[in-house]
Length: 233
Image 1 (cartoon, rainbow, N blue to C red):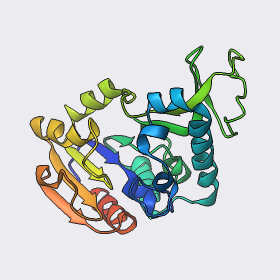
Image 2: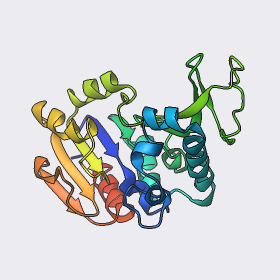
Image 3: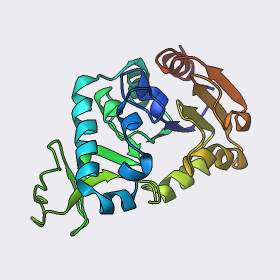
């Protein structure tokens, strides 16, 4: 593997779950208290913006209670020490990759700590609550929403992702369910381009059968081990 020139890495909820971030399936978490269609769709936001803004305010506040784990830190080490090309794509909207040391992260589903103005369409770094309708720092209109890609919306930078998948030597999926498209189809795109494929996950995902190799266990253990292999120990 040390001869690999181009690696594309996709991370999902399993990478941040060990840090205490709620996933869709986590018992007793924020998602269990709300229907996805009420808080993660454009229609839900149009129907009850206070509910949606309050929900994402809670998610943003929850980030202050968690820390990056060894999986995040290992991927930052790969960024710093790997001599080839590497694209880290995450489905996660938290900032734990960055807090773990990564500086180049493509958030295909947006970021909790970013606001999108529905009037001027500009994005701004954001830490404060939105439920009280603060003004956009650019145009001053009170039309901010979370800069998070909801169901029914197009993920960010898809052209860049597909271009990387078409030329990579290795595609690695870490902690994803393999159920949500378009990300669930990345492994097939990479295979069609002749890339090696590896899944690192707590348990087999819905798309495990598409991968040439699968390893199962905690991301905080599997990812540092794999990064050590890539970097030659």
